[in-house]
Image 1 (cartoon, rainbow, N blue to C red):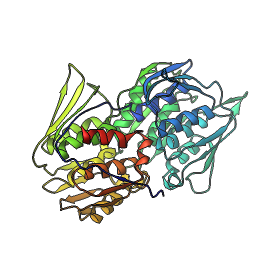
Image 2 (image 1 turned 135 degrees about the vertical axis):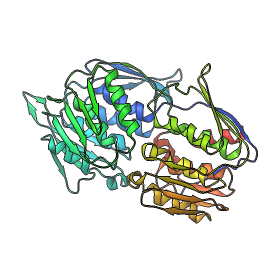
Image 3 (image 1 turned 90 degrees about the vertical axis):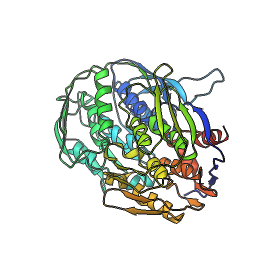
Image 4 (image 1 turned 120 degrees about the horizontal axis):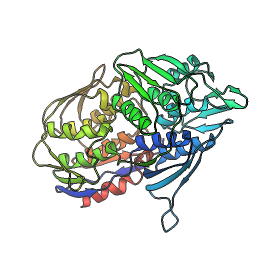
Length: 437
């Protein structure tokens, strides 16, 4: 783990800022997959260029797609750029580096099953601890040959072929996706190219992050794929994936730390180009801020979302099951509120880049906080905090949570702020600009 430390800036006055957030990582990576599987070229406009999306582009290139990010007038690939995708015509094998990207780990293996050769998956050391057995078992149910020592990275997917073409019969898969909805999305994204399509039945308790599955279904339908949905069951019918000119929305989860700054430091933050309707779970953060006492208003004429606040913040009790990715931001704000908060329904966060529940509790308690882990969440009793080291655990959302705490707590040193490049390159500069005004 790198020892680089970043001194989080303290907000000495209320903030007043307008921010423009790059494209959604979740939408960008789904669009890349659908474009690579389509029957003709597609384009992505406003796409995010970050470590996670670069890993996805490299993975799809390894399997035969031709993916070309556009360049600006200086010849540079920018963070909001147009990406041209020529789909893969045949998959003959390859090597995929997943890095620490859950979408690559969970979306690409069902595509690799369509190969005529072997596809080997590797990743960062931290990624080797993340659960993959659910996906690998699902592929085995479909008749796909998978080799893995412990059902974690590294593993290989061995394609089956007829007449030189990779084939997966498809059919019904029963799986407990309680640890990640990405297992469901990954199978659905590739399912139209299976001979019988695919029906995924979730057999476990409530599926976490359900809005992300709804996002997947919506995007599949936009490419002409027929999808039927029932409670805990999704059917993708076999067929062609049509090309599309995708316009990528801003990443609303990446916007939440900046909106949180208005609540924590007081003042106003305006986020540009907020979508009027969206499947992104980050949209729910505005209701959370309102429950904590901030004012949040959407301006339909300009498409801006504006958060303002002055005075103390209230604690909240929230079921975060569908919006677990927002938990680090919410915990950071709750630690600076005036009353207890209880966040629950997020046991699945223990299997993310790190055990986010344990990491948040450990970090805050090391600063004088009073955070208690429960079976499926956290109880945050606000307490006076002091400066110190905030560990990121190579987790981008842990790093941004430390930045939020630093708005009010002097002497906050965030370890490895560069990990934010996973989904939001240049976060530290954006944050400094926010605080400086």
